[in-house]
Amino acid sequence: MGDPKDDWKGFKRPGALKLENGVATQAATFCADMLDIIDLAVGDVSRVVPTQAEMFGHLPSGHRLTDEFVKAGKRFRDEVLDNHKKILNDMAQSFLIAGNHYKNADTQSQTDLDTIKNSRKPREGIERIGQSWQVVLCTTKGDVYGWADTPVPDPSDYQRAKRDDKGNWQIGKYGGLPSGLKVTDKGALVDAEPAVSLLYEDFLKLATSLGGVYAAKDVATGWKRIADKLDAGFTDFNANISGLVDSEKWTGHGADSAKSAVHVYTGTGTALVQAMKNMSTVSMDAYNWGKNTQVNMPNSPADTLSPENKNIELGLARDAYAGWYEQGIAATSTAIPELPLPLGPKPQQNNSTPGTPGTPGTPGTPGTPGKATPGAPGLQNQQQQQEQQRKLQEQADQQRKAIEEQQRRAQEQQAQREKLQQQQEQQRAAQQAAQQASQQATQMASQIGQQLSQAAQQMGSQLATAAQQAAQQAGLAGLPTLPTLKDLEEQAKKALGTASSKGGGPGPGSAAKPGGVGQNLDKASKLFPRVEAATSVSATGARAGLASSAGMGMGPGPGPGAQGQQKEHKRADYLDSTEHLEDAIGDAPVVVKPIVEQ
Image (cartoon, rainbow, N blue to C red; front, side, top):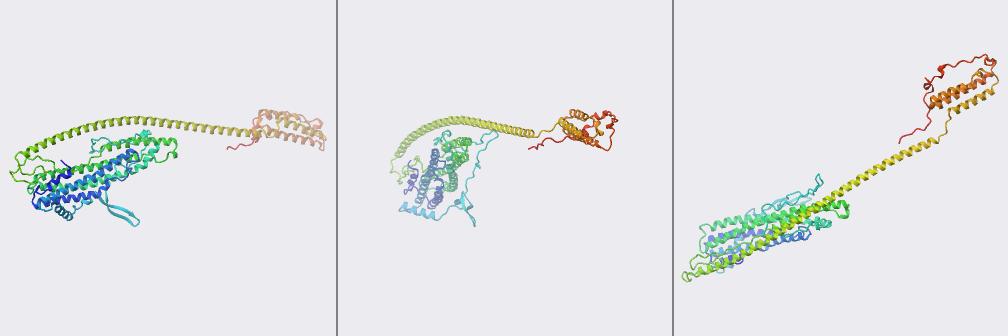
């Protein structure tokens, strides 16, 4: 079998297919409607060809994965859609030629097909599939509404990881491909750089370069929209053309071969739609792990962080990279589906009588019965079938060996990834242990510093108190010395003696003994030392009074003491009692400076 898009050209030869004019035109009309849907897909194809060079970051692995998405989009544009257009065009021309007697089959059939296409439009609503009426522009005068693509919803809100009660980061990790996606036989096309090989600056740059991952979401939206349009178009086409070729109207020369070719093509259209929906799913899955990686990358230059905070940011970035980027990029590269090309008629076994067209791919002009050599076509077809079966068997063997080799390589790659992942987990555990030890050491140092600070403050307070007490004692030591009770008594005796020597005559006080008061004061000072000063003052006053009495002995006449007639009275015992001495003396005088607390 040749190129799929060339297989339908055999039916365009005059006489290869004969149909009633009305049936042929109706079949061509269904093809024209499907061509309109293909043209809509061509108009949207730019949405599935990424233009963002760093859709998955600046690392080489991100560039390689971006290239795989670009290849898929370009192949869909340049090969898949182009082949569908050519097959539908050849199919429609074949039907028109089969129902009309053209002198110039190719030119006239193409002209009639263009007329049919221009007279029809796609089914109402199919052009707006995947779009919604929404705000497309915000201005100062108000919002502007229009038709715009409905984006695929985000599966998460993508927030930076937080620590749990034990201090561990709640990062999460890639959970594998979404349901419905299958791993291709090619295995992993891209392997990410190990997290342990990247530095802080690499993760800092990745936080910026992964901003292009929004293009993956746009690509996912584009694949889904085009797939939905083609799905609606193929559904209508399959129902219409199948209903026609399976009806009693579909009769004529070569009608059965054309019917089989139609069913082959409708099957490839359904497979293409499913592959496109898978491309949308895998693109959105790539956007998901890309965003989870980006939000956990550092966003501050290393020189603006303390060494401790830098290590914390580096540990978080490596864990997020290993858990999301490394696993996600490998899984995505294994699930990019192969977009199937459309197929034309397959070679059919010729069981017809001599003179009828042979294999549909190479039909000839019908001949008259009897001119062909009986049995020759059958023998030739049998040899061709054996040769084809041999080639198919060789191709099957080669494909089986290739698949086994790919599976073996995929298993080896998986084992290497698991081993590397285990090593990375061990390294991350060691890093976490080192970080915890560093944090504990920092906390201990902080506690010791606080204790030393408190001790220094306490010692300073004690020194200040001691200095204050020393200053107070020094102030007390600088006070003038207070006279003692004995000093006051001596002063009183001297004063009394001076008064006696100056007296002119005997007086009533001449008979008093000067030592009596001193003895009483001595007794009082021994009993109550702290009232010594007050008692001394009182004694001084008393002695001064005695001195005055002695001075008054120069009165007008001689007193009884002068004549020796005054008898000495015996001192009452209660006068020596100290029972009410405290009340008599009163409060002790303040002899020190008061201390005001700080």
